[in-house]
Image (cartoon, rainbow, N blue to C red; front, side, top):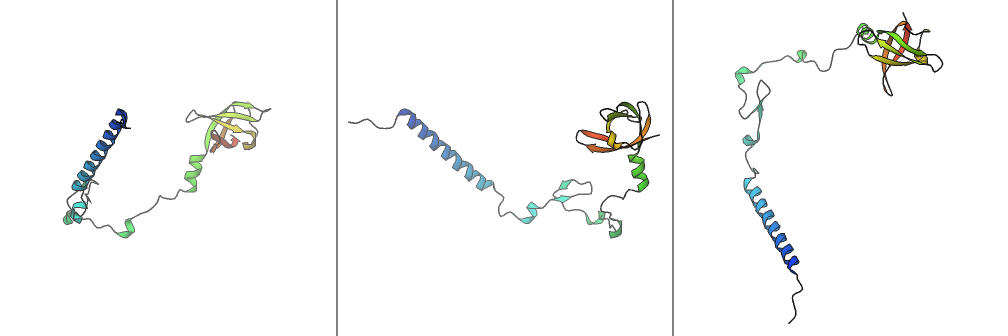
Length: 151
């Protein structure tokens, strides 16, 4: 008589596959029995109370507050030109300036931050230790001082 073609290892693998199939079918049946399909609409609704918390109970109509349509503001308030100028114009001191290479650094007097500037952004001729006003713009490596003017 011939020996069977299956080895012990193959039998074990087949047993594991059968066990996994059985576990998978059990999980599927469990999910079907616990599913909320076909549940009523009331079971699925969630309400938001006056404090922004989610609840199952509907809100109390006596606590309802009427809001006029005109009182609702969408967006942010527009900035005036004065606010933009105050925010953008900063004062500082030139700590380093290399005329041959055409760049330098400004120390902001309020925040003590250093900002890079290029000769092309100068309005007036500046030297080291000069007090200047400047504006900030985002550059390739961070904020750069632009429109640099001597005080």
